[in-house]
Image (cartoon, rainbow, N blue to C red; front, side, top):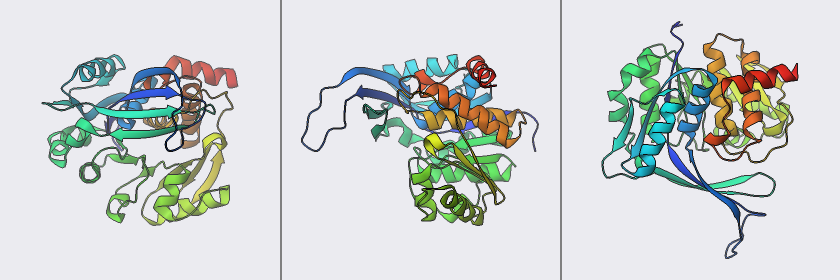
Length: 309
């Protein structure tokens, strides 16, 4: 295991257009919303920000558009303690966009236009392979082209860099990719798509985790919403409860969990303790609106955990 404590994130950057509604519109229905905002998001960027703010030494491999919002996002990422040297500006391209509705229960539905994220090609990944090779951990999601995710996983595997995959948005994945993954962090829906197991209980989560272990993945964390996380290491499973808070919206809760989890693991914390740290970060995030605006800083996470005792 490398001792440098460095982390690489490969993934997406979006501008999130968020509208709060009492309920989601049915086909043909117009619903008057409130609290419209544009916030910086994208699963890759959210997870990079969560890692950066919680204290990781992190480089981000991603693509932005040649537009005003792209310039603003780049500056914000740098402010969030992220090395943005490998974030490319795509000539003539537009920054990715997510259109997000949030209902009265804090749930969300999202539509995405990839924009510049589609330019994160395998060739571009190879250009930045030194970053992956030098890192202790590579964290990825599935808002980037799948062949690029696979290329990065191969590079990481060759250089003994730990591959962590948050398989979101939900999509079927090849055994080739899954065999290169060391840690996987699906939610219930994503776990079902990858394993065929409907996750409604701890027993279901255990079965789904075992199926992922069979694909060659050593560590499985299935996020269970307000029930916490099912952690299975080499087939030994346990549920680790989260913290009860009043959720305002759940945008980027999973991303915050993933980024903070990596920070804790890079600090050589035991997995169960790392999960608790990540739970705390996510608990803070759901009490705030938006994606990156909701992500807490390290002192906030430490303070939250101290209050929990």
